[in-house]
Image (spheres, rainbow, N blue to C red):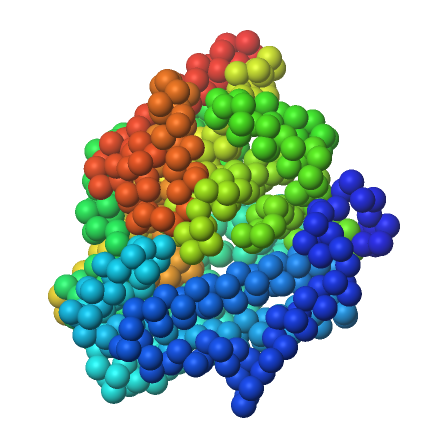
Length: 606
Ligand SMILES: [Zn+2]
């Protein structure tokens, strides 16, 4: 593998566009925090503390300064973190990165007084300030900041809550320690051969064409969790009691409301998702029946539901082929969009393309207000890599448009919206590749991958969301969580989602014990709403006229200048209704019918 210094320029991202070299960055860093005073790095900002009740201009000036520091800091940070990730073993990069992290921490501390001080202003005065033209640039920004005002307690009580914070993390931390570090699954013996079992190998074995390997892996993995059923039940119960405590302390009517309120997402969005999936669940049952038929099994077990329906080889593409198909696939978004992306990939060097020694693994999109988007890849020519690049490019284009069209304070998009643009572009790529595919085996491969993707992100995450809601409701009603209750409910949900074609093996009852997301406080539903919004929007843009495309582009340009649900309404989908989820399931249905036809044809030919 290449060392970092051996990587040719065209394969590297253009960090020099941020700062020409290390020296320039260090110089900028020195200027940035050059006038510390009495232990403070930004005494100018601190000077506003205690002055907010003395005039709206103090609030405006403090916000302007705070955002300016934040913006400069994020530019310095971006450079340090990109350099760090391209060569994690480089001691100089590591030192710089740690330096900037500690500076960011100091800034968070020195600006922490701003929000509570704003919240402490009398309502009348706050109203008056919000109406002032001096704050018009920050109006929505302040409204978001003040959203929790009615759920904020007296300073004494807030202090007490903060003091409990660390102790309340115990359940989640213990789960992670047990699951990620202490657990050893040993080996499985398959056809006389010993194979190591871990989280990573389980993910491979359960998709392996060797059926007995799948069965052994499934059983051994879940038996291990089963022997700790009381421990996992107590941990999960502890976490949910934590959510309940926070929710009641802050006067919310439920844990769900407490989790969604800060983002201004109505609980109806959550319920609409579950309801829509329930109404259309028969399409998932149909997929399971197809699996049973194609795999030619008398009984479709739970270890048979992930294996690919085709054993044909992966589709491979060189990096430059990938660039070209991705650029071609975004044509439905118009020539401006396509040109920006083309320029970014082919000329501006957004992407750090391949693996090198000590480079960070995986892929992501990054950057800041004053930079181009940057994409980290570890491209290896598999179809999965092509989709990763399309996905990250989707994030990057969303960032590019938001930064271009919004002031700094509205240029980031919130988590609820984050995966829409990336998933949208993956869908454009799927459509593009399927349309042009001549080889039926390749087409089956593509369809199968896309169907699995939607199943994992839409159906499975909704099932998780439903389980999560259910167990919170039990605790809210005072019903104690026991392993028996959790197993019973988890089995029932699996039966509902998988349908009659799948045999409910007993081991599935304990699966909840190994899912980290149940500790995240109503997080997973966003995977399902994200893919639903993306698929519904891509269908609209592909079938609709230029006004549908413009609506979608205005969403990309919107950043965080509206609440997420409003932003998606502007794009063309109303997530408080079940329509977008149903539209996404319709896409699943359409792809499934195509796959059915192709597979039946393939069988006839045999
Ligand atoms: Zn993403």
